[in-house]
Image 1 (cartoon, rainbow, N blue to C red):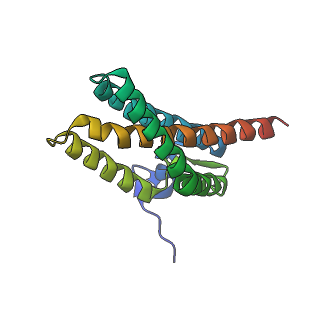
Image 2 (cartoon, one colour):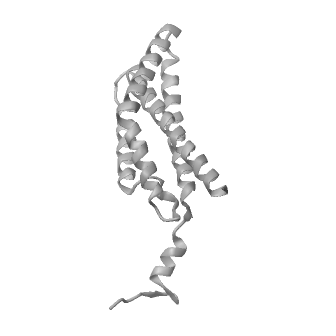
Image 3 (cartoon, rainbow, N blue to C red):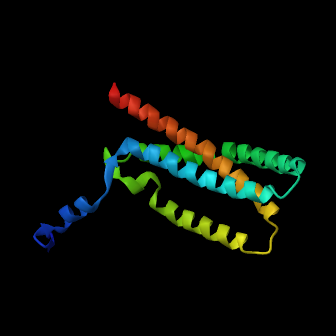
Length: 161
């Protein structure tokens, strides 16, 4: 037998649905793109500050190395991650929680990566060594964000037709 709990005159399920910040599913592609863009720019900005202490030739060499690593990393790893997320978002209900642009286990991964980043920044490791992985990861996120934005635009165009 199904029981519903009443809280201040409302059933628990209706209260939860009122508190759920639901948005049309296609917005999640834009939110994912915005989140990946923000994180990518943040990582690249940190790396640029660290590289500014070096002569231009070293900056360019490290920057080029970072971009090469990013392209390889995106093509062999992250293209699958982005597509998996696009497919997952596409399977959500027409109106979904606005935080569903990242799968719930993904929030744990984000917290772990932030913790590792903070830990590494606070070690005695020279910042120019951190600049390469920061730039590479930032560029990977920026490339991935473009795919989310492209899917967002396609979803919006499909809705209008």
